Length: 580
Image 1 (tube, rainbow, N blue to C red):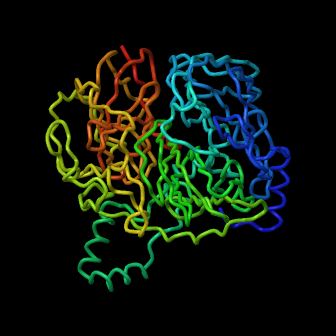
Image 2: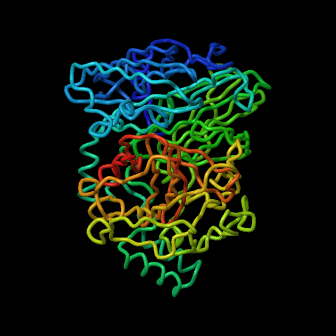
């Protein structure tokens, strides 16, 4: 968040120096072998090789001017960036110095289930004082991350970046001269248990973007009294607010870039004319960011670690747990790496500069947009360009994204329970792949949408689905309960996937909150309208009131986690998957 006094800035900077020492920012240019050219601000340390020793501990930090306890990896928050190489076997010894159990999950990594790091599903967790050794062969390359899957430790700092180099130089279909990780996260001095308790008592506790009488009169002036009254009546009957954009806001969060506040200004250098690769990873607990670099176009070349057909954009939304690799070609000067939260309650910026010691000018934070009928699953979204309806050709015939979809594949019925954990229903949920989402609509910039993403490789020969399952993302905002098909995780039976099958999964979001859904152990091949270029991801954002489909080749036996990656949604919106 931008609000920080000079005194708190100095305190934070001093602690950051203690945390990170005076090691310079490093570039991973040319496959991670070269250092940067003299950036002077701190970043997480970089550990390379195939054997690592990580220690989980509690460490005093000072982000806001007050000491607080963080959960750290080797004494830093975020933890060190680990650099692996595709094809090699890595061994990671993780020692727990916490008074409670811990774990590390390697997010997006294809590995044996016992190495996945999810307590009570993959293994027992790492008890206090114990060391657990992860050992597996690396089967992929790209940008990923790791985090705790124990309690709320992710919120208190237990997360870090993974950079996996390709097996052979030149295996990636793009070139660059310089390489930086940009890890975004959210920090609170409050204990996460306190945040969760407050949300349970009052789900909009942290939302200060509420409606006023003045807003109503503004709508009357804009739409007329009858239409304005109807709109208010609808929202009131649903007991919802069209300003409910994010559960936890900058009221308690300080947003960080590579562990540094906006005032501390994470800084990266380049030489004019160079191609700079920026690996954006959203390591937040609860914050969806909108990212842009005013004055620079970004060429998106990878999503969730996998190469995509390059697409030039001016802005993109990055959900919790997603990653996007972009390449920029800056000229002489300084540019702001600007990430504002979806609800516009705060932001964090950094500087990409050809000179050291220069702080890029921050753009003003934008005003929040309100949710629309589309976000309530009541239709209303119309395609505005990009991959148009007419070009959205599916195997099973021409399909408009906003039209009801009849699947040619058998749908496996699953238990559903209308009740306390399913109080809202999207009456007309639609595929809105070309909808950039609330806050990014009609802002005059070229914004990345899922409809823009096309796999770099052809998927034309990939097998077609054998069957489909439909999962409703449900909840009860008044009681802050989250569930799938109206059933909380504690009351749910595992999902059964059959080894060797090709499964189509369709999500319908019956809530007014976005949910980034993450399947462990297997890829999610997102349907964006072109079966020959299904996009391979590990986390897919399901917009409010929308539906979305992807396909999964069930090629990993064992038990896996499947959940929303919003930390405080995860307790209920979670399933165990058994591949049998």
